[in-house]
Length: 168
Image 1 (tube, helix red, strand yellow):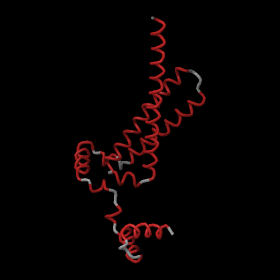
Image 2 (image 1 turned 90 degrees about the vertical axis):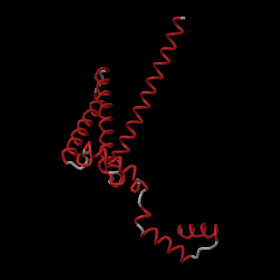
Image 3 (image 1 turned 180 degrees about the vertical axis):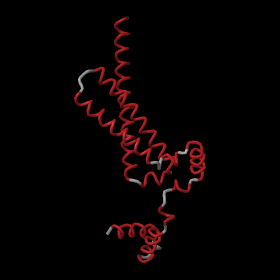
Image 4 (image 1 turned 45 degrees about the vertical axis):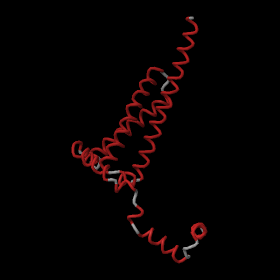
């Protein structure tokens, strides 16, 4: 039914396509792998930059390394312990320390995403569901940290303005 709606839309615009031609077009698009690839795969500038970075950093080797995966697993487990400590901890100094550790871990995750995107390539990276999940969680964590920093700054600025009015 959706295919017929699309055909009617296309047919109404030009009036030159038959239903058989339309289905042939759909079959050609679905069967032609070159038409279904993401444009980034053919981006020569990205390929050149990626090759240069990989030459010096060996991100292509690191991103596929079982040792790297094991290290990231240990970091995730450590992060889980930190999150559990948030639940039970009441001391403000300890909570501040946990916040600092969490910020460091977020930047470690950002580093992992960068290493894997450069090492594996954009298409290979986003072809793996776990990598997509890692990317989304990292993006949400960075956005949350930025939002919290903005709120803290706004509170500080408001307090400074209050102090200024008291001094005057």
